[in-house]
Image (cartoon, rainbow, N blue to C red; front, side, top):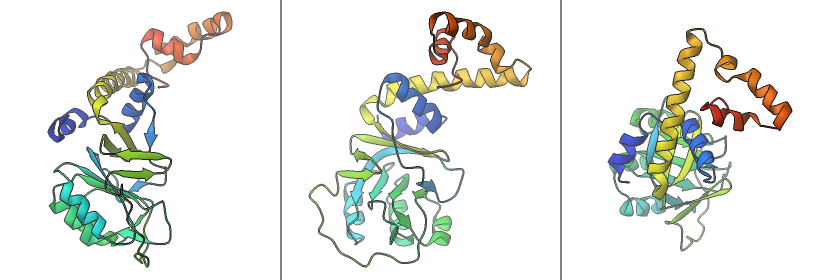
Length: 234
């Protein structure tokens, strides 16, 4: 799926919709640690992953941009370090001018005021004034894989990120995931609309019937919801 199709397909899908969809499809849920947050709220980022491993110098980011395409998302592996900021205003501006959709950092950023001015969505674990005071050897796969928490991100992935967090998803399943997520989203919206008009979630979920089936047949609530087409839990 190309960048334009990703943008169009995932424009109105949230990370919770998509997380539920990948669970339904049996795809592993790969998400950034909860500490990776947007620098400012109200952002929605989707694009192919452009992974990179930071080793103490910005040249790895510049090299990654040599291979990046407009609409990509720079995924920065700084090993979750909390003793240095690895992305600041100049790198962010360079990424923005290259046409990328955003930056995800497993680590820290700085120059927060300038980042607000640049306007490119940035997710990180927080901010720190000082940059790196080290220079480590660059690994052979520094431009093809990135570790974010317990998950490996490659060029075969795409990123979806919003106020609820960051997901890493297989690009070759993008259409399947979007289709499942759209169904979940639409069902939840119908349920919410009915609640606002006075029909409780217990009524919509036939909760009394569920309790009977649970006690009689050992049915789980998730099984019951799937049987009736509900999305309350998933």
